[in-house]
Length: 266
Image 1 (tube, one colour):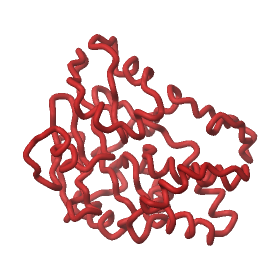
Image 2 (cartoon, one colour; image 1 turned 90 degrees about the vertical axis):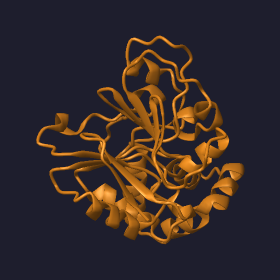
Image 3 (cartoon, helix red, strand yellow; image 1 turned 135 degrees about the horizontal axis):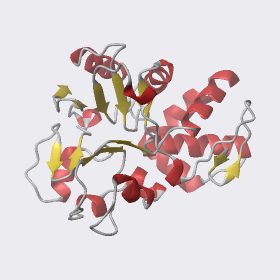
Image 4 (cartoon, one colour; image 1 turned 180 degrees about the horizontal axis):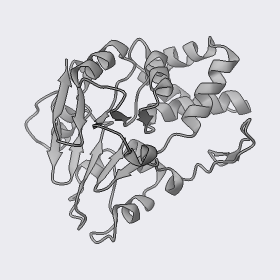
C-alpha cells in the first residue's frame, strides 16, 4: 500500500494505492436495499451526542451513514466513536484532517520518523490525549485502526452530491462531471480547505452540491461577513456546510440525502 509516498505491505499482501485521485469510496453495494442515506460530520469524540443523533434520525440497519471526517480529538471518547463506525457495516468514514493527524502520528511510530511541527499542531488541537490512548491499546487494536484509517476515502460522489471534509476549489467554471472536478483536487484542499474555498464564487456549471464539514458554520459566516447563527446548516449555492460546532457549544448536524431533512442535536 502506498502511504504518504511509502510502500506498506498489509497482511493480505494486497497493495492499495492512496493517491488523491484514487481515493473516493464506492457506494455500498450499489445502495441496494438501503432505505435512507444520511450524512454527518465533526463528531470529535463526543460518543453520547453521536448516539443521540442516531436515535434522533431513527437510524436502522437498512439505512446508511457517511461521516465526513473528524470523528476524533477534543472530545472524551475518540476511539469509541471511531470503533463504532469501524464495526458498523452501514457506515463509512470519509477522512478528515484530524484522522490525517492521527495517521501522521502512526506513521512516525511505524517508521521512527516524527514531523514535530505537525505533531505539535495536532497536540494543540486535542491530539495529545488521542495519541496517548492509542499508545495504551494492544498491538492488535493499533494495527486494526491503522489499517482502517489508511484505506479511508477522501471524498464520495453520490450522483450530483459530493461529500468531502475540507472543501473543493474549482480551477475553472466548465466541467464535464463532478468526477473531473474532484480529480483535480489535491489532498491538502480536500482535508484542510478554508477561506479560499469559502470565498470562492463557486460558479461552476455542474448540477448538484458539495456537502462539507471541517469549518463550523458560525466561523463560515464570520469569514464571509454574514450574520452569525451558531449550530445551523450553512447554504450558499452549490455548497452546504454541516459542521455545527458541537464541541464549541453548537449542535451536531445530520442531513438525510433522500429528502433533505435536517436533524440537530444540542
